Length: 340
Image (cartoon, rainbow, N blue to C red; front, side, top):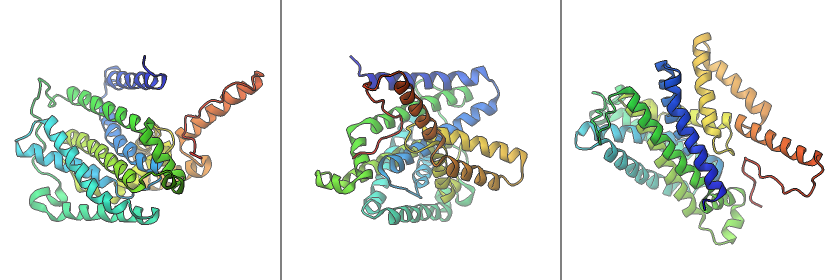
């Protein structure tokens, strides 16, 4: 029999698949479909970064390097004409995993502040390579000539609806994988490292190896977001590897919440909506975004998703107390509890 937690996750995944699939057919404006693809691509970037930030307590300022690696590596493989789309995606994920292994082997041995800045340094190094290796990357113009989308297994991604549905399926699969990481013994060991690294060492946990493992997994997941965006825009651009892209991912986590699994997706939707309406109604969109983020961070002192989850938990506990059932089993908060 399927475990309750696994059954709940399966239901959530099926609901997400149904909602993402149905929305463009209910609301037929192409702008909505474009918006959802951007949410999926950048959502994978933010959710993969939260495997480091929320789960492990490692704040990376250079996570977009792997997002850009996915876009450029996939684009170059497809332009070579020797790879199908699934094979190019597989090689891209594996290649980015190797890149993140090389970078992470240096970064995860450092203390938190130094970890953050060395990841930024590596990102800017990769960004400079993209700008200067013009013959390979196209420099500041990005990959020229577009990214081919040859049919595979009867699937033609030149059709916009098919491309969207393909992005939905890939996104849902990646979310399901990250959810299993989040709920696995590996994930709870990472929480222990986050909350009490000395106790983790005392219990025999190889902290460096565990951090390196999640660093590689997070980089691989971020590369899938880069692949989806490259497929959608039919190109790859230096902005994908610029420090502001990592900053946006951190803003998404701050807006949505770092302790709720779906918090980064909530933050991605909020940030993209804020950018959209701020650009339409004001010429000072950066100022507006900054004010809104400050209000949320200083007012709620946590992301919107974390705040709502904690509020619902408190309401449930109050109802249990008012119903005169003090012996009722305590409810688990949706947000993550600290490991003692």
